[in-house]
Image (cartoon, rainbow, N blue to C red; front, side, top):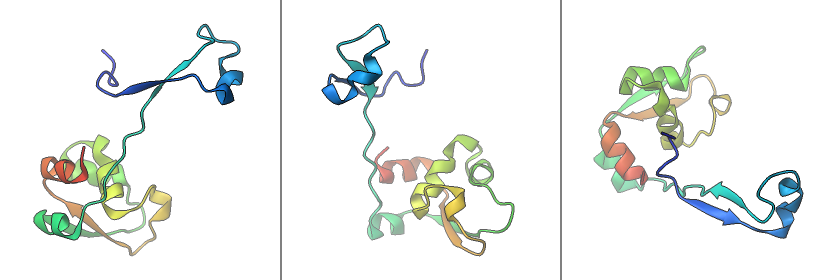
Length: 112
C-alpha cells in the first residue's frame, strides 16, 4: 500500500504542462499531489510545548536529532520546520535549536 494513500490529489490539465504529457499515456491531464500548507506555530502555541535546547555543532544531523528525541529518523523535518531551517546547510555551527519533546503535541500545533 502506498504511503501517499491519504494525500489529496488534483488533476492538472493546464496547457503549460502539455510538453510533459507529450510522451505519456495520459495526454489530457496529470495527477499531482497537493502540497500541504504548513502553519508556523504562534508564540502561545510554542509556549505550550515542552522543549529542549540544542546547540548545533560540527557533525550534527537533523535525522540524528530526530532519532535521539523521537526515536525515528523520519521526523527530522519537524525539528527543521519548527526552527525555520529548510535544510541542514542553512544551520550554522553554534546555532541554538529548540527541539519540542512531545512529537504528537508538536504535530497538532504544526497542523499535521
